[in-house]
Length: 213
Image 1 (cartoon, rainbow, N blue to C red):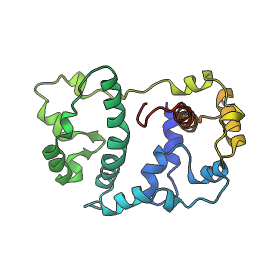
Image 2: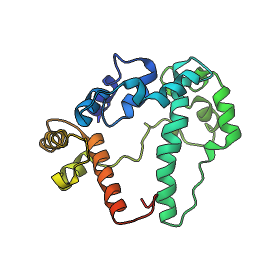
Image 3: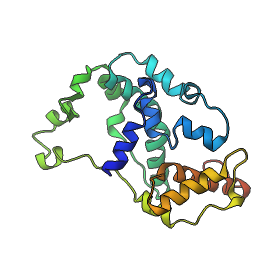
Image 4: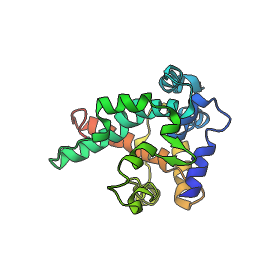
């Protein structure tokens, strides 16, 4: 939703550029981590790997540096992992053809304005397949595989004291959940992460092997 995008975007304002991307994707901001973990948090320590990727990017262009972050972290540690697990669960073999090593290396060397200019993304790809793929497909808005997470969280069982994690401020969880369920706030990212932690703890208690999920 637009308000969700605006809130997430504004979360990075005022922080160094190297922290923008991890702040936008994080379930909590460093200031909220302090309340949740009841300890002082150093943003540069929390985002150390992301900052390193940003600073080591071969170009100082914002687009190239952002691509470096998404390539190193979001793709391999998130999207590709989930696609692979979901596919293998259904006995499917998936291939990410645009992530061919030689193709990726070539794209990374291209000037940034070849990738994004005047609000147009994937400029080269669209030019390359313009005579094959209809404009109705090329020109449509980007659509990810979003799930109705905000509503799902509202319908999930409420957090229980028995689910508390050592050192974590369980009152922070309860207040976040109450605000989300009442519609006063949108804490879907944090509460989904919290639920995931609980599922992992339950699996560990049941003796399930790592990677079961």
